[in-house]
Image (cartoon, rainbow, N blue to C red):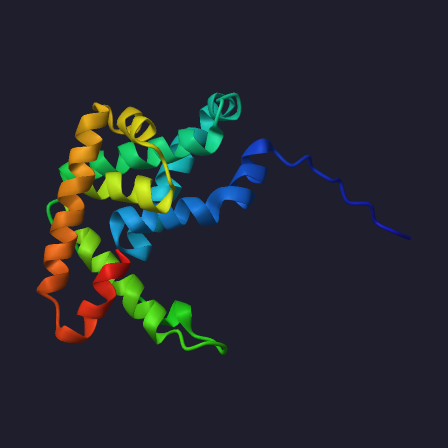
Length: 178
């Protein structure tokens, strides 16, 4: 005698989370600089959006909508938070294949450089260089003018390049990759 299991329909929320959670978690990590805080940030945003998911579902660009919510929550939480902790867990990068040490070192260095920026500069850099958004898209998300976005990016890159000069000599060769 076979037991039939009821197949529940997969909600659009579940489909969205399956398809986009990795990318959104990456964005969250780049903003927070900490895996645990990144997971908390993404979970808080998704939890807050779930009761009114139809708004996200009917949005013209649902991923951009959630990314904007992530950014807003990050900026708001940073105003409430005064201490920044950076902890890079190397256990997540274990495995065979090509030497991952250089990749881990580059990610670690990038994360450290990002943590030196103020919140708006950091958000602008993440949106431009990790999500390839235009000045107008970033301006819309940050609630500022396009010229302000260009200024934020310019100052952020200057700050990151200057910080690379202050790092130990073996990491200076990598600064041109920024």
